[in-house]
Amino acid sequence: MAANLRTSNMYYHFLLAFQFLVLLQTRSVSCYQYKVGDLDAWGIPTSAKPLVYTQWSKYHTFKIGDSLLFLYPPSQDSVIQVTEQSYNNCNIKDPILYMNNGNSLFNITKYGEFYFTSGEQGHCEKKQKLHISVLFGNGSSADSPSSGPSALPEISPSYPTVFGTMPQPPSSSPPPSFPVFMAAVALFAVSAMVGGIM
Image (cartoon, rainbow, N blue to C red; front, side):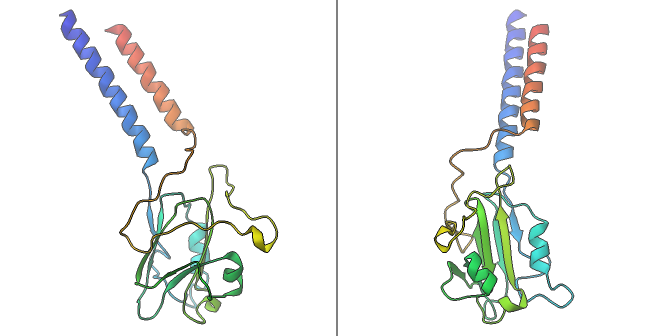
């Protein structure tokens, strides 16, 4: 009987440890693909929604591993990633990245500010542009530039199609959030109580 009790106890502890590991893994792989503009495809904003992309970016919180999906007719439009200065001036010459397949995916691989506009002449001036911020947990961006033109942030590598390698995780992961820590403590406490009773 003691052998059966020990085997049952070991099985229970193994199950709790496995559930804890699954809980931690679930936290680290929750990446999302956001369709830019949600129901509105990538295009010149309508008069009913002139600030659709400004409002859209304010209602989303982006993190490393997420991606932006730009949908548009490839014969009529494109997407370019530009610097902050080019974004503000609607300068579409010399983009950082050019995507024109109508189903363009931008993978977020680092913290910072990212600027996009249409690659078609005149579209940026009509507010077809998007600015997103990918912030650390404390609300600051890693690459916020100091003053001067030479202090522009490093630009994230991106992948214009859904195929290719996955972005690498950040070199130092943030500490587990409080709810994950409390779940771990609760699981340990329950395990110790059940183990002590059996």
